Amino acid sequence: MTFRVPGDALRPSPGQAVPAAWVLLLLAYLSLVAGLQAAVSPTLELDQAEQLILAQKLAWGYTNQPPLYTWLVWGLTALTGSVVFSLWALKVALLTGFVLACDGAARCLGLGTAQRAAAVAGLALVPAVIWEAQRDLTHSLLAASIGAGVLWSALDSLNRPAWWRDARTGLLAAAALLSKHNALIFLVALPLTLACSPVTRARWRWGGLLTVAGVGALAWAPHGAWLAAHPESLNRTLQKIHGDAGAAQLMAEAFQALLGFFTPWWLLALPMAWQARRLSEAGRFLAHLAGAVVCCLLVFAVALGVDRFSPRWYFPQLFFLPLWLAAATDPAVRHWGRRLCVVGALLALVVAVALPGRVWWGGARPTRQNLPYAELAAQLRQQWGGTVPRVVLASHHLPGANLKAAWGADVLVLTPVVPWAAPLPSEVMLVARAEDLTEPRFQTWLAARTGLTPDAIRWSGEVAAPPYHRPQGAPVTLRWARVVAEPGK
Image 1 (cartoon, rainbow, N blue to C red):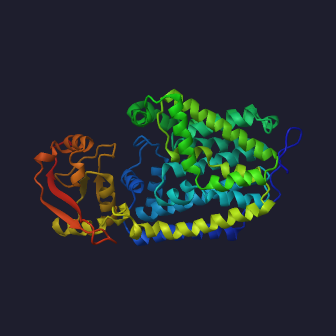
Image 2: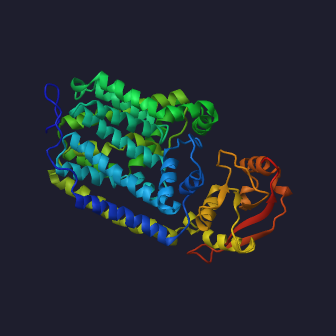
Image 3: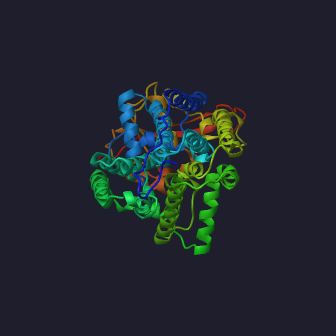
């Protein structure tokens, strides 16, 4: 094992970087899955729809989530001219970067080729990586990808000290915080581990930490100022997770979410760790890091009064556990490394079929990608007079974003999720789902933008279409109205 301290410099793995052929294979697989999902249905998923709406404008902040993902969507859309292509391309790029950053961290830890292959295969057994990230995750995926980059960059700086590597780590840390607020937990746990773990503390540099913190703080400061001016943004997040659960219930919730996040990976990890375990400095370090993350997570949970845990919360925090398994075991023992790779490859193939296939094979209730918004958009256009409106007020970002995807970038779509106020022309199209009309958030937003209540709206018509791949299902309907905006709204 080449990763050893104290008394000896940390040395990266003598193995080469990931061969170009493997990178191209990874890109081809992720692009294929994204392309199949886009081909099966033009309808965007919920999180993607929200990003399409928000990316109509650059701002220092948007919702209760940080703005980096939206900035990337905006930039890619400006570059390519297609927001839908940008959404899928960004997902492919982030997943590719996540895998490469994890492999880079494994190299810095001194893992051999077989161990690195087992680590990457282990990632394919984590549902958040292989399924949710390819389906709809946005901010959590970005935070995990950049968090993996922070881990790689920090270990690289430890191996080869240089101020510019520390500055790079600081920029990545700021980017992680601009991706998701809970990335702070990993960013606190990592330096604590590097400074306190017997494996790394001989190489710890306080000057490097100051550089990382200084650069990171400067890069994050503009959004921090926006948060200070918009405290309601963080308050919405805190209200969603705050409760009065006791310590025992909180621990049970945390464990249940952890089990859900790592199933089915842990079903192979436990017997592999038992039968093929070996002592290694890299394994010790990653175990210390995992312990620090869990401790920080529980401290934050207690301090903020969290009463529930979502499995996806662990994505930006414990993404590196498959690396720990590879570092703490010998993949050659009982062919565990080969088993892990085979199962990971088979699961990846199953997902490649199941993700687009779920649109056809879903249960009694159609999936969101089955909703026929392209057909509804065509009917709305016809009823509007054969053209598209300049401005659309939509009751929810899911129909609003999909109408914009069908009509093009020149149409401005405003929904209750939009935090800014845009001046309205004299006449706008209002589009609403029936279930949104009784929502207090929509009613408040509608009154602020038009001075109307849902009961006062004179609806001009209604469009309906069956689900794409389930024509026997109940039709999807949208109401629409011509609304005269009040001056100054």
